[in-house]
Length: 177
Image (tube, rainbow, N blue to C red):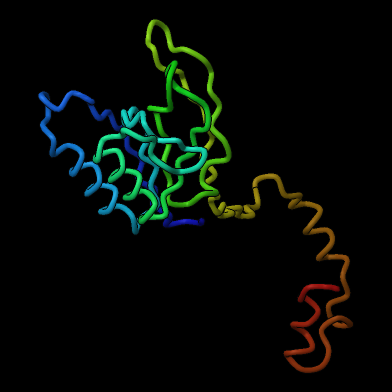
C-alpha cells in the first residue's frame, strides 16, 4: 500500500433493541458492508451479534435469522473478523472487521473498560506508506573562502590548462572520477 491508499474507518453500535431503530438496521448494516466491500475498510464496534462462534465461523443453534444473515454477508464479502477473545462475559460482541486479512495483526483484549461490561480492545493497523525524499543540497555561499578561491585561481597557469578545442577546455571544469 503506497501513496494514494484510501482506508475507510468506521465505528458501529448496533443496538439489539429493535424498538429503537426497527428491524431495518440489520439490513442497513449489511448494505453498508456491501457498499464498501470494494474499498479498504475497518469497521469496528459493538455489533451485538452474540450467537456467532467466530472460531469456526458458524451461528449457534437458536440464533436469530439476522445473526445468520450478518455472518453470511461477511463470508460472501470475504471479510475477516479479528477479535478472538470474548469482549463480554458471554461472547464476542465487539468486532474489528477488514476486507484485507493482513491489515490487522492481532487484537489484544485489555480487560473491562471502566464500569462497562465490555472489554477494551487494542490493535495496530498495518499500512505501509511510501516516504518521498525531499532532500535538496543547498550551498551556503556566505561561508565560502573567497580569498582562498581567488588565490587558487591566480596560482593556476591558465595558458597551460586551456589548450585544444572548447570541449577539451570545458572538460577541465567537469566532474572528476
